[in-house]
Amino acid sequence: MSEKTRYSDEELLEFKELILEKLEKARAEYENLCASLRNGYGNDVADTSPTFKVLEEGASTLGREEAARLAERQLTFINHLNAALVRIENKTYGICRVTGQLIPKERLRAVPHATLSINPKTGEKQS
Image (cartoon, rainbow, N blue to C red; front, side, top):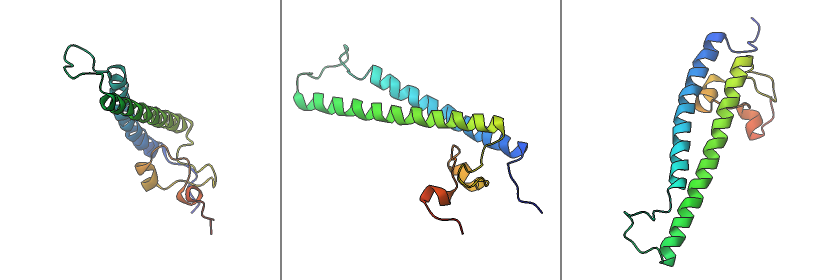
């Protein structure tokens, strides 16, 4: 029996559904982070605390910087998921870009945008 060189259309559909679900959640999280950045100053009429306190301003700035970093990471994740959808359409999804072999399903379920098997990812040599 020959070794499988790509996932079947049914398997690709399963992965596509998983990716679309993760993509929906990731986009919602990204929108929440962007909304918090747009409205993060808190200087509206509901703000009753003095805004001149240095420590509060520093904490606010730190929180906004962290939210910006999280938003950037989330956008990168969304881009990786979109690239995985393209690979599904091209029927190249799940093929390790180093070894050319199929990435195990367990890994793809955990990291659906993976393009490397575990051994190349960790730098181990194939036996």
